[in-house]
Length: 92
Image (cartoon, rainbow, N blue to C red; front, side, top):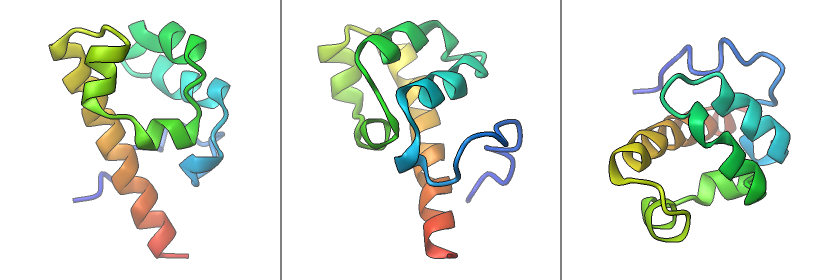
């Protein structure tokens, strides 16, 4: 199910997540209570919208050294964004 309000507080962000800059990815995650602690890491690793959509749990844990529980929460956010992105791309 697509969460209808996932982007409601992010009206300044493009609906096509592939267009997000690193700064926009950081902006999105800063607004989340469960993932905000990792915005500096996303910024230093230059995670833009395309990289965000390609991000894997394994990369978070093994490459970025994020603990398992936090990685699961981040991936849940990424999955919600993927569903949002797919929904909006299919309804163009």
